[in-house]
Length: 249
Image (tube, rainbow, N blue to C red; front, side, top):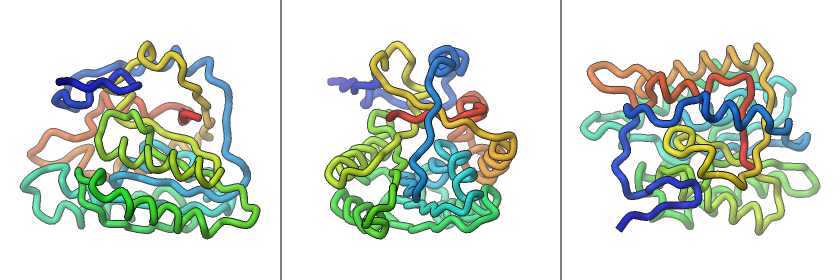
């Protein structure tokens, strides 16, 4: 039996990132009419299921916020070690790629908390995930206008969806602002399947776009691995070359 979520993605279907998927031009038409958005003037906590999700989904926002001297903390939930079965030590490779990407992305320090949950199995560790998020957002209690930046809970990847759902639950319970970024929904879903979605666009300066593009290329294991097809091929990367970043609000 197939299960289709609110994004229109069949969550049980086999997933091939090399398949063409939805073209960027289909999303551009929808997002052109999307209103401008920016987080409140306060700290950001960016939750990423795997190293590279934070840069793909919100790298321009991270660059812009850190350049202002505002607090940005990344919660790196897994090391992404299961992306290529049989690649030994991939987790350590991806951790170093993340460190390099964040140094490339921002001249100011971006704090990273590594949770180390098993890649592909986040749904079995929700309590640890929830407690880690609560611990981070709790540091900014007392009037600071925190925004939680989280993966979209209908993104079409089980880890992304598990993390996204917990983030939404925490945001509601703690009454904090949340914005969700899509990764695989751009590729696997379509504008027609999200007719009621509320989008906001965070405009990127030329500097932020260049920094994001350089940071994305730090994830060599994902965008240009040797002897393997990339997890994030060029037609998927096209969704992350926009002059803005789009968030579900």
